[in-house]
Image (tube, rainbow, N blue to C red):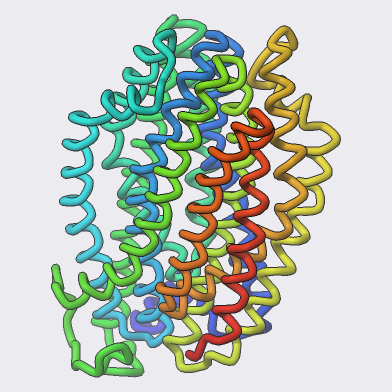
Length: 469
């Protein structure tokens, strides 16, 4: 009786992505992930919205200016997320539960060390980095203050992302959605409370994010540990693990270890390219931000608002790509790679269905969305934001196809191909932003994005067609 109850509980909590119609399975798995990232992005959007509407244009520019630096830290958290998620998915698909739990524990320990190092570096070098970005004197103090508080919250950022990766690896995309829906909604309320009622200025925006993200992180980590305990109990109670050797290295494993150097290496093979990808994109954005800042506060503020709307879309597609990675990894781990192609087609169809209303919304009503962040008197800022959205949004169909294909490459462990396409996109965008800005002004900067996306998408599709798994 107890054995059957534990077995049923484990099946209820987790989702096997290796059975069922690939499109139905993937869509049911990915749609909550899409909802989750919408709420995740509300954190940053809320910061900019409250700063722009209740503090002023300088505050909006300060949050947007700092955002490019925060993306560097987010890159490391994302890398830990995807590294853990892919490896845990493979073990879960193979039903090698002991190694799966060892991978989780190894990720938590190594990420804690990495986070501590990044916090130290952040406190030492963020101010010089802001100065190197040609941050205007009017927003330098606010940008630095926002960054200091953000760095204090890095442990929450890291462990929340790892917890999300574990949930996704176990086929559970709904739990992160519930956490984010509650915490991001609370963040908006606390943002307004701290700024309007307590008059805390830019610090109130940062502390609101710190508080809400911290609570979400703590609760999600507790639930992850309970989830692992449930799986452990099921195994300990006599539920048979179908394989007593790991399909990844052939070694026998009977008990989960607290830390495994061998598994850390496997995690790093996936995590480091993802970290480098996101970090280099962030560094590239910092170079681009320095060009944008040279056009003045109004252009910086307009870009800060528009890029939040753009990043909402790109991050959503990236997260859906992560879902494809989990689907790919579970099926490869289970020894049924034929389902991967069906998963790619289903993922591509999903992101294109999402792209249609977003493109129409940004082209037809982008001005009204931008007015959430600023008032109509900021004419130059508003024009900047509209031009940015008009130029980039039609190419969401292109970049979404790339990000889903990247998901397959990551899930299959084809990290060299993944990095080649990503770095090509980045390098082209940075170089073209500098060249086009001197020829066409700020509009030229925005034109660099579609060119980089289009060429990189062609590369990702080419690498996928040549991939063997």
